[in-house]
Amino acid sequence: MKVNKLILVLTSFLVITSCSNKSFDKSSSTGWEYNNSFNGGFETNQNFIEQKTGPGLVFIEGGSFVMGRVEQDVMYEWDNIPRKQSVASFYIDETEVRNIDYLEYLFWLKRVYGESYPEVYEKALPDTLVWRDKLGYNEPYVKNYLRHPAYKNYPVVGISWQQATDYCAWRTDRVNERILIEACIIKEDMDQFDDGVFTTEAYLRGYYEGTVIDGPKNITNKNYGSGEETRIVKLEDGLLLPSYRLPTEAEWEYAALGYVGNTVAENINERKIYPWNGSSLRNNSRKNQGQIMANFKRGRGDNMGIAGNLNDKADITAAVRSYWPNDYGIYDMAGNVSEWVMDVYRPVIEQTSTADHRSFRGNVFQTYKTDSDGMVEFDELGNPIMINVDSSQNIYRRNYKKANNINYLDGDIESQIDITWNDELKEVSDKDTANVKIDKWNQNVSKYKNQGNGNSNEMYAYGETSLVTDRTRVYKGGSWKDRAYWLNPGTRRFLDQDQSTDAIGFRCAMDRVGSPISNNKVNQRQEVDYNK
Image 1: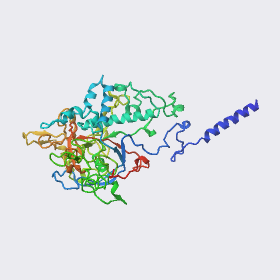
Image 2: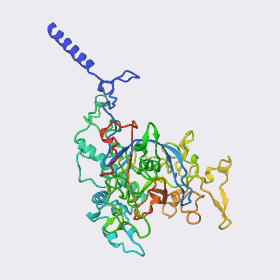
Image 3: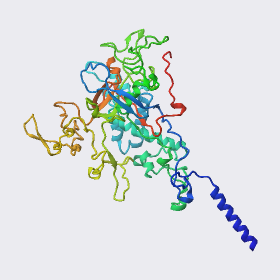
Image 4: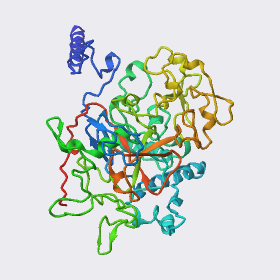
């Protein structure tokens, strides 16, 4: 009997010793072990190195540059003064979004929502009628440009800013869904419809009920008693990618200029007019000397040159990658199509009206709508419902108080420095001499939602003195319809976010998390060979 007790004691001692000898990383601040189910199971991914590059993206190492129009303002608009900006590292698409990319999106929407919510598919359709010209025969493009395989690698056009933004959100969900499928965490499900579709937010919040194959081990199960051996992937695991989105104006201009190729010991040794070096629009390499560097219009009636020796080889848009990339390896940042960026348009006439780091105008701060139990509510398409933040809950915040900051420091009455500005609620209208109430805090912005102006800023009287509203977005770069002046990345134009043209496309961007420097081999810059 004594022998049996001794064996039991020794066995218990060995078990305890073996458990205590198991190696866990420890917190440097408390000494408690990470990823140990016996002390609660606080988890951290100690093997994470850096963010992976998403499909179609190119890494852009950030830095400082002079943003704005640094050349002669031949249009006399004075809306983009030069100013020094610091841009964080980010990712951007190697090319514009192509017709085939957008058709994949349309196919998915029709398959998933076509029966229950056909309006979702119809809302996403490009406006192919943008090709029509009152004095031109463009009907072949109306019928063929989007869907014919001859144009599958051409940039999609007829896309509004809002449609481009919706595409970015869809692309985020499809990429993250594929990551989980390839990691054997969820099963590929072709039968998901309506609010049962995979979205990144729905998955992270446990709303998505797909078929789970496997998942990270639930090391908290010992204490919490959930009964589940595995759990869903969390943001802390570092597996899912950040959202695809439109680039900001500062990001787009920084990426287009590609000064990384002209940097020597923290100095930029030559300013650029275009995304390539020099003041010429032609290739100066020995093999390709004289070749046009981008798709643009040289002059009236000259879209592509003379037969037998076409200069840019494109009378309208051209297939992506038809011309040389810039020093970041990005194609068509000058010419082919102009591109939407995130920013709301305002003339930039002084440096204090923009931030000098991650500059962006258009912030409307939002939060998740929750029910009485504090659970996030989702709409019929499986997306979380967002609402504007309540200023009453931000009384003691120093960085912001209200939700809508589109008009902040843009020169309107709200930007006055007089301490009594908030008491002046009316002004006299020159039109009818009647008092006009000023919606200084954008409280009635919803009343413009279904109207053409969508404006809550009294400084910009839409249709009377200005075409600028809170819905006016910036687009950058020249297109196949533009002269060489617009190929300069510092130029900017604007259009309502629900309108589109035959010369505006878009490309997506993504935030870089963690270090601004990448050691990943695929992110290392390759020198451009203009002899190819």
